[in-house]
Structures are given as structure tokens and as C-alpha cells.
Length: 238
Length: 231
Image (tube, rainbow over the protein chains, first blue to last red):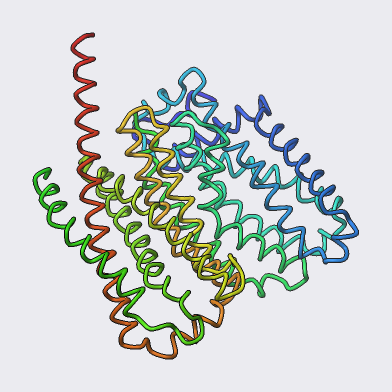
């Protein structure tokens, strides 16, 4: 980052968030540590699901019955791998302390971390969703638009929760196991909504048939954006 | 504060004991059998108050969590610590008595219906709050993390309920039928008495637990002070 890249003391919320996100994404870009493990893990989960439910079963039940569940379970599990790493990079050589020394709004740290996690999840989805179309034999191109909207709305909520709860799990020195225990119950409404919306889209019902679920997703995204911004400072504070 | 808690416990203990015995007598001897479900319906008088206490406890947890993050006064954290544990206890009672009633009444131990699912997820959330607190290196960190998690858990409950309600549809018909016909006077009296009993019982448990939490904190502080002297 150039010398002008660091925000001045008390710099604006947005500048700080962007700086944190850029830092995280640059580390990720140069090491590919978290993304490679997320993608590989997701691939393995997809393959396991293919053994669990063979193509004949899926064709018989219809794509909308099985694929949404498979897809979101895969994304959630792979996401957890990424969220846990997002704070592991901060505990290495105690980078978190340095980050907290900056006189900036803690909410901005949350926003930046969330954005970096969101970007990682979206990258993961760009690989996993087309692959699932190949593995489970459905026509992704025909429903690409609505699928993208559904993915974006629900991925944002998962990234917010993953960042906040990932910070909590990392503060008590537990990784993926505790994070999964925290994330899955809290995200229950989001997963139900994600599966319902994806099923509606894959069954050709379009977004209109899932409008109330989209409402839950948007409400969930906004609520946890607010909760994250308001409570992140209590989580990271020394 | 300690004196108040001790007095509260001493006053509430005999009241809770007498009321609980009376409640048990009412449930088993006083109240008539329900026409359709028969004697198994009697579990309702303990099951529903336990469920209401569970959700009340989550409300106390929310208040304690916000109070602690706002004021940083340990009394709030002691309150939410007690509310988490007692909430988990009553949540467990709900999850055990529910299926016992559901098997004969609905013909199944469990169904993924809104109230059941929300209670189960709430149990997981309360357990997670206790886990995070137990894992934390020091009391302050544990209190902060558990408070954040407590707020998340309390806010999540209504959304989970709504989501599962839309997902699985309405509560099975049995409950609707019960709601249409007003409760028989003796049933209503028994239910209200059980409700009051559970609130007194909850108050007693909360007073005792908060008092014990305060003692634990004092012991911890003494240990820390003495080890500080040595160093």
C-alpha cells in the first residue's frame, strides 16, 4: 500500500473500512491460503453429496428439492473455514493489537473485515455454483440473474455473522469448531430463507414467489449489520 | 445487594415450596381430565409455564447483556450469567416435557414446527453463551463476549420463529381446537396457579444463583489479589 493509503488519525469510517478490506484481500491475493482451502473443502463436500444422493435420485425428486440444501450446506461449511482464518491472520505476530492501536471506529474494522470475507465468499461461489450445475445437471444459465440476487442477499448476511462470531471464537482461542456451534443456530432463519429462495428460482418460480423470504434475508442483513457495527468494539477490545 | 439477595431467597424459599406442592396437588388431583387427550394433557400445566419462563429468562439475559455493555457494572453480568443458566435449565424442561406430551397427542415425538424449532435453536444459543464464557481467559472478556452473544441470541428468537412458521406452516390442529373452547374454570385456575408458582420459583433460583455468582467472583478476586501479592 502506498504511503497515502493509510487513513489519518480519526479518518473517515469508509476510508478505514476500505483500508482494512484492502489489507485482508491483499494478504489473501498473495498467499491464497484461505481461498484455496475454502474451494478445495467445498469441492470435497460437493463430491461427497454426489455420492450421498446420486444423479438418478436428484432427477427423480427434481433439482429444486435437493440442490438448494446441498449448495448452502457446502457454502456454509466452506465459509466457516474462511471466517476462522480471517482472524487467524490477525493473531499471527499479534497484528490485532497493532490494528487496535489505530484511533479508528471499531465498527469500521468490522465493515472492512466483513467486506473482505464477503469478497472471499463471492469468489468461492463463482467456483462452487457453476460446478454444482455441472455435478447435479441443472441449467444455471437460464436462472443466472435471480440466482445471483439470491446468492448476494444471503451471502452478505453470512459474511456479517461469520465476521462477528469469528471474532468471538478467535478471542477465546477456538477455531472452526466453536464458530460452527455459534454460526449455525444464529443463522437458522438465513439458511431457511436461502434454501427456500434457491428452490423457488431453480423450480422456475422466479423471485416473485419467494418475496417474503427475500424480505427475511434483507431484514436479517440489516439487523446484523447494525448489531455488528454496534458490538464489534466489545468483542475486539483488549 | 448480598443482604437483599439473602432475604429474597429466605422469603421465597418457603413460598415456592408450598406453592409447588399445591401446584402438584392441583395438577394431579384437582383438575379434571381433558376430554380428548386424557390425563397426558396434565403435563401442559408444567410445560407451558416452563416455556414462558424460558422466554422471560431470555428477556432478562437481553437486559443484563445491554446493561453490562452500557455500564460495565458487574452486577448486570452476574444477572445475565444467572439468567443464561436458568434459562437453559427451563428450556431443557420444555424440550423434555414437550415430546412426552406430543407422542400420545400428535403421535410423534418431534415435529419441525415453529415453536419446537425455535425452542431447540434457543437451547443451542444459550449453551453457546455458556461455552464462550467458560472458554474465555478472564472474567471481563467472557462477560463481554457472552453479552454480545446474549444480545444476538435474544434478537434472533423472533426471526427464527417467524422463519420457521412460514417454512413449516401452522401449529397442528390439536392446539387450535384447544384454543377455540375456553379452558374449563378449574383448568384455568390450575394453569394460572402453576404460572405464578413458576415465576416465584424462577425468582428464587435467580436470587440464589446471582448470590452464588457474587461469591464466586469474590473468591476469584481474592485469589487474584493474593497471587498478585506474592508476585
